[in-house]
Image 1: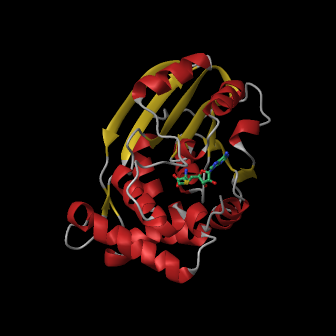
Image 2 (image 1 turned 45 degrees about the horizontal axis):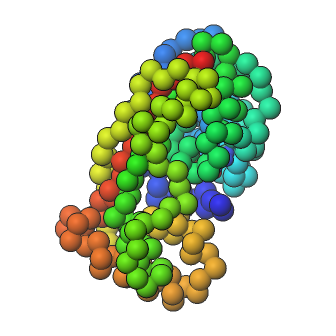
Length: 247
Ligand SMILES: C[S@@+](CC[C@H](N)C(=O)[O-])C[C@H]1O[C@@H](n2cnc3c(N)ncnc32)[C@H](O)[C@@H]1O
């Protein structure tokens, strides 16, 4: 997946803004080491400094890490795949916002999280839950393929029960696993939905002609207007799953 770090930083900063709430689950402790997994442009990595001076951000996207280093010079940012993290028993906390659903091999991911945590270390994360952006995905797919089909996804959006099992299989003890609706207003009024789709569905759009993309956006907007347009902005049908688990 190619990330447009500028588009993300300027138009989709709501992702990190919502993640600020997740920060309240992170205790303050000047001795603890914290990893921000899938840190993107580093907004929350920087905010984590309020909890401890020892914060590392990592992300698979070089574009995101270049932007994070520009925005927060002097902080520790690394480019790497979360399933191949090199540390062993290194972090007290693995924090992650809106990144886990991008990673298809959840078994490998949770194994890696287990490995990098110290004994008694804690995973604190939030990402897309079962039925996340379901109506948007259905409309996008119908427009892409020209017919109504149940929404397929490139993302991993689990149920609470499914994720509890995966955590346990990886040796992590779930403390909290909960899901909830989080209707999410998108920036830029009438253009909000198409800007959002350009970022988050880019893998399906990048090889298409721009005229075809515009047609897809118009069809999506027509299909979703009754449900997701509130008269001044698009409101995306987000659902989240929030997890805390201990090694
Ligand atoms: C929606 S962004 C969230 C960024 C940031 N956590 C925030 O709250 O703004 C998802 C991030 O996950 C990263 N990501 C996806 N797959 C990854 C992987 N296998 N390893 C590390 N990072 C990954 C992406 O590169 C992207 O920066």
